[in-house]
Image 1 (cartoon, helix red, strand yellow):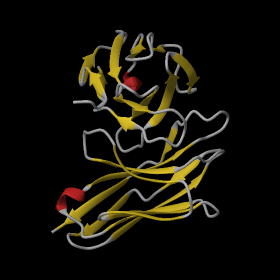
Image 2: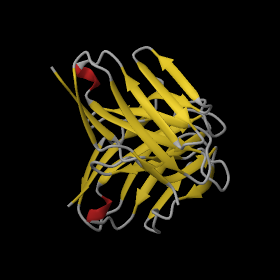
Image 3: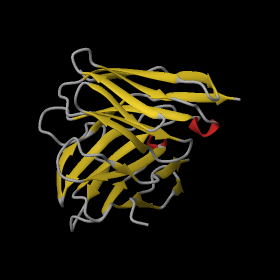
Amino acid sequence: DTGVSQDPRHKITKRGQNVTFRCDPISEHNRLYWYRQTLGQGPEFLTYFQNEAQLEKSRLLSDRFSAERPKGSFSTLEIQRTEQGDSAMYLCASSLTSGGETQYFGPGTRLLVL
Amino acid sequence: GQNIDQPTEMTATEGAIVQINCTYQTSGFNGLFWYQQHAGEAPTFLSYNVLDGLEEKGRFSSFLSRSKGYSYLLLKELQMKDSASYLCAVSGSRPGNTGKLIFGQGTTLQVKP
């Protein structure tokens, strides 16, 4: 399978715990995006990488959130001190080069914070 | 500000045609995308419009008018498997050109027998 993969698919955690999600993009794609989606809403942009450089972060991304893409391939999204409001589907997408290129989404990680 | 509007829900009959509208106001524009999302699954790409006009792809067509900030997705010969959420998204908001997508809330389409 050469699509975008995400791990884990589901995560249940207690409030205050830290969680980390992984995204493996399509191999030749140099752009990687993280989005968050809550029930009944469209995805909301969180952050964007071109190769290993994080070039944009949404104001939605509080200082409890951090993302990395150390070698320009896979990416991780960490949430520290989780809150119940962090419960959502976290989607990763990748694309080639410039804006206007189609983004292909992974299956998502569904987070539930108790 | 940036705003994308689409109807929340629509219902249609199997075999019929349905049109899902999307209006947008964004700070930049580098194309409009339609994605299909089944419940609990990731969005899957349907169509991309950057120039005015109609793009046809099998049973699905998408139209764009940049001057009106308007698009629609047309689904023909509806099948039960078309029951899903349809997401309208705009790419290319300024500053920069990161390609990030701004999504509407999605239109949940229910196809009935």
